[in-house]
Image (cartoon, each protein chain N blue to C red):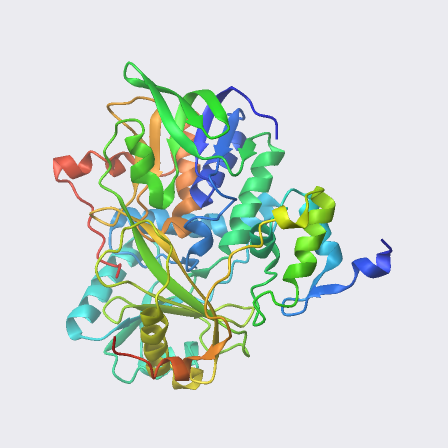
Length: 93
Length: 383
């Protein structure tokens, strides 16, 4: 891979580059959940929709594990960002 | 990392307590240490916590621990060689009745006597500290400017990476399944990866501390209590720079330097099914509280919502020390929702004890037999 590719921003919410992701995978943080905690990838408003597949592919390549065996990480609610003002109108049982 | 069948010290739990204890043990010369984590580093309570750090406590012990922890946090980036994300925006405590305000002021007198410079602030000043604050129904406030928060992920990674450099071993995805007791001594642990003989075993299992203790036949009064928390999208800074917290109001809210606002509250009852579940009731109730306190937050979106376990004790104070019935089996548990902030000092003092040094803070009164003796250290400043 060229240096130019390494500078590509993979997580646009948190502005994390391919280089940073590769660096942390090589340090042994080779699961999506670990990379999320160390780099905040997937923690922004898109919730990983933009970066998750690319990161899983990188983990698969660098760890030499088939992609279907790479843990895709935890999905947390809400599915889409919701305004607190709207949430606050909820209630009852 | 290569599996060793023998270690001087085995630490159960790869959260802040486990990694900090490992780091200080290695720093003080006991380097044959293995940290076992059933998931990945800080995947338990530490990585799920609200990340606040405060010295505004109501017992002398918690005040002493907390101010010592702040002293450590303030130079921790340099010590560990990695950033911890420390951000000291203060804690602004909010009272909603005269009685609650008196309690805060009683705590403040204790804090002041121990060198913690907390003080009463007016509503006008509270709004200067926290620009989005309404709180027109509040009776009074106290503030301590050295309080704040750090990044629990970065702090735990920093401790672990620094400990690894000093020679400790770390195994993730390795669950402890048993503790071997011979006579009246702990002599090893069984795990999903194999057995390790150990001279010392330390329980740093956070919300699962009671379960781990039982493996050695020790009954701790702890329970893992589920608490929920949410975070918003990043917005312009200056909404809520301090940690805004109320015990009766049942909330803690803070904007991270990154711009997102993190909010949590205590659950009704004591959910202790050890499941990190979430409920829609939480984000509804939390949003109501947030909007009432800071009306300007109505248009801010929640992006994520999760839960974690508070490792509770009956008096809200931690359990640190050796088990009487099972020697060489230590606990550093029961932090009751403030394990992250106390982790650095707790790791340090237990390590000092284990290398034969006099701990910076005498923690003998935090033994778990205090519950049998009825010598509780009831912490009033928790929700």
